[in-house]
Image 1 (cartoon, rainbow over the protein chains, first blue to last red):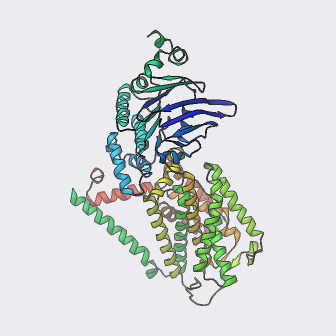
Image 2: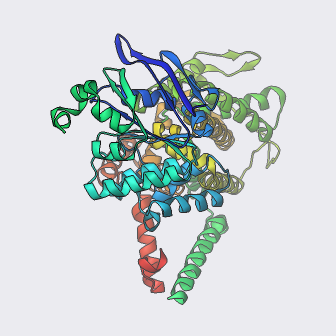
Image 3: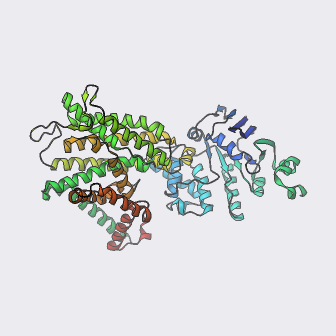
Length: 241
Length: 342
């Protein structure tokens, strides 16, 4: 059985159908990609899964539990952590403070939360910046902190919303490595990404949406070859290749 | 290098112990009741601002109606004393509980509002309470005397049970201990999970929610605690002045002054309210003593100016630069460098 089942989820804002009857199912241990042109409804779908918006229609089943109308904090407690497309660090606090807020979900004990946070920071190469204020970090480090903070909540599933946007090519490669490492620890990853090279190389499966509707899903190879996807999203250069 | 750090720690501890000794022995060598009164008010404002800070600082919103809770404390303990002879020491807890419940009821809808909208709604609430009290002579079995205010009935002599003393010294120690307690509470909360959650939710509510924080719940609890402690201060104020009326104890000026002190001292910091009170209270006392006949309310103008300057040059309040200065001083005398410490 799939870890996360999204069944006919729709989200309407007034007359606008931002997400329109999208279904997908994500298996445990997968890296699942979600792509689509700007404004296709990717982040809205993420927000539905993470509990920020209640979907207008449809259901979401996670490990057999119906989480459709759950609040964000309950979803996080259940084991789904997310990052934001526009990173939202606690700017006036240190990097360690940021991750400790995440770590506190699994333990009320301060020193334990601190230890766990330091472990997470180490695995994201942020340990030496633990006492730096978040606002003083570079863009790349802020993006990394965003993921580290989500990982500090010890999730089973991680939602990454364009965690590589704005990074340099070598930083993208490093992030891809980190994503694979997270997957290798048994954490399922559901990610939105615009950088084709990145998402094509790392995903096990990809869903493509446009105007809120699902166009198709399949392996990266299938997606890259599909006529509709090429026309809708990838552009002529991919069609030629 | 290690000896330097040890020396630094020693000097730090010594200075803090000296400060505590100084503060606790003031009544031994200050005999002027006026000076003591000024200090008592300084501590009272530091106390009230610290309790305000639980919501206004840590939860990241700007309450501008906290005088309502001061008033609830003062009125509750006083009418209980008048009507049933309940000691204000007990009455203050009743006032605290009422204030906490009112704060929670007000907080549940308003804490969802952001920025100016929350500030405006609390202001409206504060003013609403004042107008309500000014137009009410009898509240159930209690005579609250409308705009004329209430006198606490005098009990001759020093009477601990009645919370009345002839000398200022007991008041000085009571408010000093109350201040120490709330400072400790704030410090403690800032180090445990609810404190982290409050600060996180105040800064980036969406991010905090996605990390498992029920932001609204923590804000409401902080509001309840803040209102409870604020009302205890209200009882103290009533017992100190022995007379109060709505415009004074429930006025907007009062609420604003607490916010001014916090903003100038350092909102969301532990020492900020004390620093703010140390700076602003003398201004307000001196203008009141020397200029109240010619220019009443001048202190608020000066507060405004100070606030503008602080917001321009030290938007996080004066506690930050003072802390830096103190650390610099410690490094200088003990010969340690910043790098070594961290």
